[in-house]
Image 1: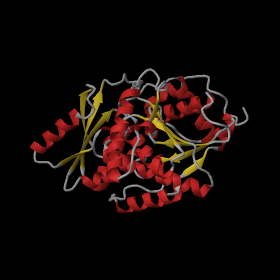
Image 2: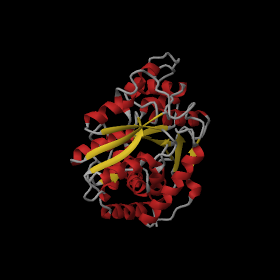
Image 3: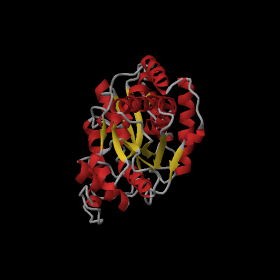
Image 4: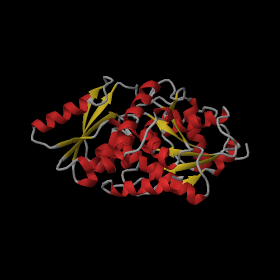
Length: 351
């Protein structure tokens, strides 16, 4: 079977998988010409998952499009994350769009607030704007337990909650994200290239799992590379493998865990704490491409990609697709860090 045949077969499978239609698909695949020139190659493309739709978009909205088909007669969505969670913001936005109540566990203590405005602006302000009820709880390391407890309390009150897992990460979320790999295959074919790699930030796991399963069918020669942003590469890889297996079983596709690559060393000192490389690349992308990256996910992901390029991972003539997972609202919670003079490289594409 040719790659084209595999792509068409995979497309037919997705035509039969239900989704709510929450997202504007396909998202754009655009060249980053000035960044590519600045680095001297390879050719870098960006998959604009920040453009999935309402509520400032993001990669989680694509997952929710599939996951929420299982919500049935629920009247409330329940999920959780840290104060500036992009996932929570997209769950709250989806709930508003669907006419559902939304209750969110807001974890405190996973990271030290980087500024006085951290808990007032960005995603948390949007959560309130979208009508979510916020429940402040301490971070214990168990991502989903407090969400489940909150859902049980709401059930006892006569509500009909549907639990959206932390990061919208589960097997069905990974299935939904496999559609991204299909889109990249279709779009890159139309643009006349085949990606040598697909690179993205990897945290809760289902985004990378979906990309890996989808690419194995539609882009078998493209390496999917996850940049660990949680400072927990072993945990991240384990979760990616688990969700990949679930998604592959759902899609009736083979899966080899040897294809899962999670690159460590680019998460900075801890989750949610941007380091110099992150701030530098955020400033660089603003000046070169007018593209806003967030300091927790996409900024660290692109910083990792650039480090791999500088280490000689790819040839100058290769084509690399970077997944922009969204998260721009979080920038406003990190303004103090962005205003720091980090000595970012010059913005000239000829430098």
